[in-house]
Length: 336
Image (tube, rainbow, N blue to C red; front, side, top):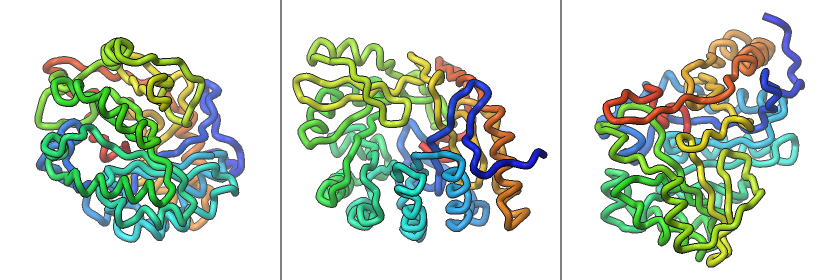
């Protein structure tokens, strides 16, 4: 294995610079969203997870290689024990190589943690919310408490956190609610991004019944709103428009109807230290083994270099009736 330069930027074979790392801190979640996981999930034994200190070490290595944005995900990241220790530790990189430390959450723990997150220098968060109907919310999440999530969002807003709502578009579930969700979000100063359901993991059902192409949603929205194209980028795959009637930003993440891979700047690390260079491919690299093999980061950097050199040009998501999931692992394993 060649000696790695611990300060060299990460550039793949397609000349894409890797500046965005998403780290799953746990595969556990207090919800069981119907499009994400089955009701009877088997989670990883706790001893298989990276320690918080190992996650800090791994993320720090990526920051030294030019990662400018770090997002903590899960599962639900805020259910990880002592998660605030990790967030406080990683916050030392903000302004010192790292432009942004952020997280994606289901909102269930925000009432407890919002102020502490803001105190750590987190400026914005993504909150997953697929409906404004409490009964439907319980049906989608299986265990979620809508009122608790609303209190969490309010707490985050009071703490000064900028909020983006993430909504998965689900056929015959929330498709008629999407205009209301847009108006609700924009009325509170939140951005909102619509996401196509992705074929990741078995979920106790057929995703063909859930799948709703955002091209269809956009056509419908054009009949109600004036959508003006926008050059704004948040660092992720969303393409944004401004809704003239509300003045707010609306994003579209379309892994199936519009491949967004040509400008991909992202990689993901699971809670067990597996690096996935592409959400929609199975090729991966074990970073836990080189970390645990040496107190030096030389082996870790070499493993990162070898993996980035294999980053594929794009993903191969397919969805169809009777089709097996394109990827067998659940989103909660890779990180949402």
